[in-house]
Image (tube, rainbow, N blue to C red; front, side):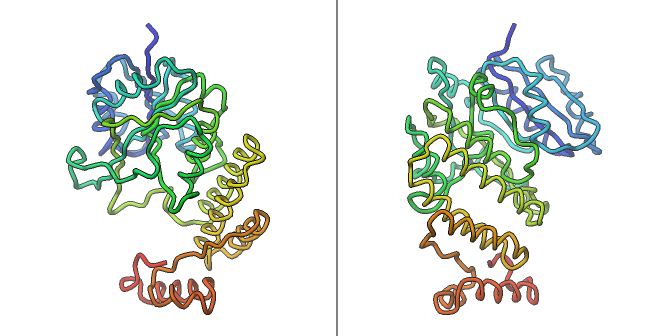
Length: 333
């Protein structure tokens, strides 16, 4: 019998979390699913932990080496059979009613997608005690998917975030948009779901079906680790998202406004460690018509002085202070 939902879980050295992750799927109120776990060459006990669950609905694919989460997701999709696709990272969780409520919301709508609230928690916290983040400016139902997307990207103020496992997507839509971009290591999910949202007929916000996003106190996430490779990936992902939006809606000038601001933020993130990326980002800002947005400097004094001396000078001073006094200035831009 073909399962209604395929849950695709990439895994790499998450022995401490993978059992709880899979349990959050096995405990769903809607039980018509399969679980495809794609192990990316783990060197810990992840595979033994998965095998010990001994559930016929779990399929384990073992890769010989770590080729990234996107590659693992792609392999899982090629193997799965479900009508709807649920992506889930191996250290995250979904609430028991997540699949049932989202299926009910989009079952009879062609190419509609669903998402729900997000709860963030640290390793030493009980995730089920956490409350959803206040994301009301970004979380709503809409058939105007471009406006939804641009609002999420910061059209009307600050930008928002929807974690990958908050979404439920019909298989037909995924087959339409194509595969993951395997060249991206950072914001690969952002680029992928940009395509998903642009091609969707409707975006349905489903209340009371939250997901739980784990934050690690003592381990860096790849998506947050500032390296030249990672920052190049974030820049490439931004360029791809811009192209997707322009191709789908070539006449909408709001796209220029949103992405000019976004590339200004990328210029800030890369300065002064990676000046070539800052230069490329500022060139994109100019191509898009400029932006009144000025990057924020974490140090309040330097943030005020940026209007006199420029944000790059003040960011450089802040960066120097972080180098000299890392404990005193931790967390400042």
